[in-house]
Image 1 (cartoon, rainbow, N blue to C red):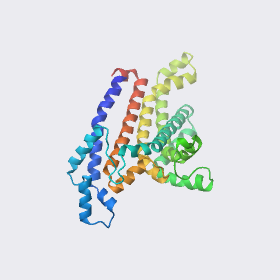
Image 2: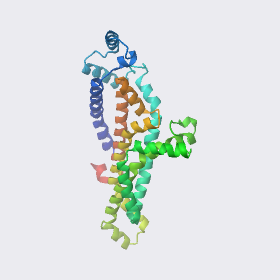
Image 3: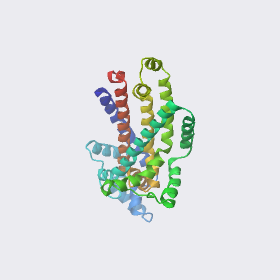
Length: 313
């Protein structure tokens, strides 16, 4: 188990460097910069050049990245070029809404998707066809488009849930949960069908193996065969599908945070990109990359818990 963790953490270091470098190069080559965002369209070229020099934007790109990387290694991600706020402080302020959306969505996808998949594999019939239809519909309709239909129905017509915004945990569990319902439903809509279909296929394969008739002949109950043995056999493909869906949820937060006016990391990334605020863009990118690393690590630990061969590798 420790080998799995050590290996994953070891390969994460070059991954963070590569992702941050690519992000820095793309952001640097994009039109517009922080100096223009600060001074406005009416600024003269001389004023822009003077501010670029003050901000260090006139240095070679690789020199700028080297300066940022040296600070990041020390735990200093710099400050926003536009607001002057430390990047770590800006990330911390935006972390709770994004984590709430991510974790809630992944939990809902995993529980409902796996539950439907197991039920479809053991019962079959119409539910299996409904899951297939749900998968196709979920893949065909982007989650932000689905969200645009949820808001008028549940927030404006039925008046059951807030249309936008985020309530912190400090405001109470009720308001916090209410502000998450529509974004989580929109986020999970397509992924639930995908997980259910993968789970059904994995469970059907597990239930078709030789050990199942032998266990029935030895008097094992159906519940024990399905939930203690077949489910464990099907666990690795299911974990893989959940991990991939969780990574997809991370990428989907940017659009959904914009739709639901969530004050999260996705909105911060969009705002910083438009302003050419490279330190903030890099901070958000590194944070999202860390999320992906954690998800992959959890999946690997799940593999190790299910399969002793993984622990021994």
